Every structure is written in C-alpha cells, then in structure tokens.
Image 1 (cartoon, rainbow, N blue to C red):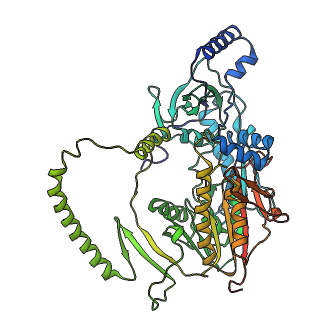
Image 2 (image 1 turned 90 degrees about the horizontal axis):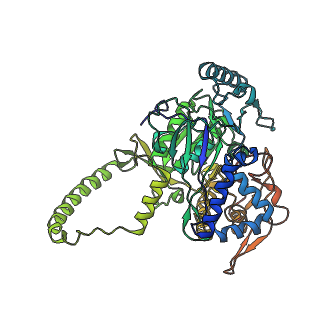
Length: 564
C-alpha cells in the first residue's frame, strides 16, 4: 500500500461539472446566446465572477425531495441542500490528552504551518495562511481541554490566464478534496503530462446529473476554489481529525473508568478511541465491525494513539447477541482468530481443524466433478451473461474510482457475539444513508424505498443493542443523515417497543431540537416522529445552522428494569 508521501498534492482549485439540458434547437440557441454574451462581456466583472464561481446544485429524487420539504419546509430544506454542497469552514481536531495537550498541539501546528510557508509560499499570492487561518480551542463546555478548531482560508481567486496542471478525479475523491484531503493515486482518472508529487494542480470532477428537461443526462462546467486542507499525517498519535458531532457523540455516552463499553459499528475507530480516551484508558472498550480490513484500521489507530483498553473483533452487528446452542457453555465471549482467510475457533480448535480438512477434501471432490462437467458446459459458456447488477457495479467503479483490495492481510479476531446484559454502555453509530455528509456533489441515487430499507436495517441493529445493554445502562444512537426516518422515527420505534427505555438529557448539548409530528406518504404509510417534550432530549445538527457542521443526529437512552 502506498504511503501518504506517494500522492499527488492538490491545494489550489476545484472545477466541477453540473447538469445542462439535453441539446435541442431552443437550448442550442440559448447556449449560443450565452456564449456570445460571455465573449462580448468578458471585461465585465459580474459575468466573469459568474463564469468562475462555484455554485453546485443538488438534484434529489423528486419523491425524496417532497418528503424532506414536508419535514423541514421548503425554505429550510433549500438552505440545507445548499449547505450540503459546501465544506465546513473549519476542521475539528481531537487532541489525544493521554499524549499531549491542546496548548502543545496548537504550538506544534503553528510551527508546521510556518515551516510550510517558508518552504513553498502561497498558492495564489494572497495573504499568508497563518494570518488567514485561525487555530483556537473549542469553547463549548466539556470540550475545551481536548478539541481544537482549525479554520481554513478561501475561497481564493485563481488566475486562469495561466492555467495550472490539471487532474480529473472521481466524484468521491472530489468530495474528499473539498473536505481538505489530498488526492491519492486511486482517485485519479486522468491528468496532465508531467504531474509530479508536490505540484499545485487544478482538480476537475465529472458529476452526472439528470438533464433539466428529463431527457437523459448532461454535463456543464463551472469553476471555483476549495479550502486549504491541513495535512493528515502530522502529529500522528497526538491528534485525530474528526467532525464535531462525532466528538459530541462519544462525550454524550459519558464513559466511566472501569466500565465495559461496546461500539457496535466502530470503524474507522474515531469514536472508539474517543471513548477510550475519556475513560483514561481504564476499562474495556469492545469495538466490532464486519469488515476484516476495517477491524485492522481500528487496531492500527488504537496502537498509534497508545490505547490499550480497546479490543477489536470482526462481527456483524446484526449478530452481536450470542445465540447459545449449548446450555453447558458459560463463557461470556466466544471468539476466534482469522489467519490467511482460515478461521480457527479458540473454543473448539480440534473440531475446526477437522472441518478444515474435510472442506479441503470436499473441494477436491467438487473440483474433480466440475472438471468432468466443464467439457459439456464449454459451449454453453461461450456467451457470457452479464447481469444488470454487474453493470451497475462497473458503472459505480468508473464513477467513484478504483477501490482498495478486499483484504490487506493481518490478523483479526472473530467473535460469535456477546451475552445479553453484558455491557454498561452501548454506542450504535448506525450505517445510514449518510445524507448529512458534506460536501456532496450528487444526491439522486436515494429513493424513498432505499431510505426505508436503511431504517429497517437500523431497527434490527438497535434490537441487538437493547439486548446487550444491562439494566441501568446507557444506549447512544447516532447517524450522519438528515433523514427523519432514520432519526426521529427510530427513537419513536424504540420508545414504543421497549417501554423500559427512556430518553435522557445529553451533555454537552450543542445541536438543535428534533422534529415533532409525523409524515404521511402517498401509499398510506404513516411515519411517526417525536412527541411534544421529546424534541429537547435529542440533538439534531443542521448543516445550514451557524454551527456549520455535517448533518447529524444523537439520541441517548437509559435502560430500565427489563423484567418490568
């Protein structure tokens, strides 16, 4: 795997493509008129500013847009959509207080910025980054000691009279660049000649959008600039770049020393390490994820930050509760180790070896059988059938760029699950539609059906969390989406189904109130949200609010006696 130094550095500008109508005589005339107007008024500052502005417009699925307008109101949702296309004006840095302090980190960052300015100077000759950018401590109660804000600069004015070198990247890569990331080789689709490490480049991205007249797809062009990103490979182990709502989520869980805590969907480990840090690395934090590679990422991050109380397992959160088939088994946690793709159960090593040998024999038999059948099937296989799913998958690969390999190697422990009532606190940062993440250049893939499927999936995970949290324990549920069906509707489901659960206040409280009421869909389905009095017990982070965060939601439950 290439290290961070093997990347194409990008800091200067972003050029994005957006929708235009499909060509027809009228649009052709309008386009020609626009071109004539642009050429005749090139000296006009207003037309120039329009041509080189960054003004993307999110185009939602019509049914999804109607749903969100019912939830937020037309004006409010319009502000949210606009905010989602832009990055936050600051980066949030969580300081590892077990290794450093906020004051020490601020001084080190200022030194690094000063050294970079002396070496490379400015991209566009404007005011120096140290003068524009602001590094300051967070002023929210409870976060002052370990949260630092790094304010970016921009937007910058780019002189296109002498265009810089240019690269074309995938959409996801472009969204990451807007968040301040560097450009890595897997995200690059094409580039100018002689682009080398350290070059200042213009970044272009192709964004597919439905044509305004409904006839196919179209692309247009606009130009703009991005915020100057902070290097991600500095002060390793001392800091972690993390969204403010994610930090608040770990704080709302209120972990205590000596407790046993479960992070059900833990990758990449940001909240897991934040929990361990708040516990002063005393206790047990169990982090699970169903991806082998993601478990390795959690392990690596915990090691970098010097946290020893974290144990990471490969486990599907939908199977987090251990189903005991043998009444004589009394162990609380059954785990195994995965080496080179072979899983060895620690509770039954001999049996697993027998199963492994038998599987090898069966593979040999099946291989012999398939060899005999291959001749007869040769003609049938001359024409290979490509399914629609494979076609869609290939389109996504082209659009989003090549991904990582399926397995990066290394050892992870597998788990069969955990005993009910075995954790003091449970964090469920559930997989979601991620409609709160910003910046976002495309939103047309989500449908009402897909949003409902997310909600069903989250409810199944929440059912597991309820079983694992002990009476008197705490469950914190969070998502990074603006979809009420995955937020307030989940809270309604939890309170109605589990009468022993109650919402409790969160500290610190930075976000706004939740949504009260319900939404009735055209098919007759009624989605219930919060009831009056409950809205102040959750936190909803609005991308369009002055706080300037991603869209996020946090709910905190206390578990009462389950036998009531």
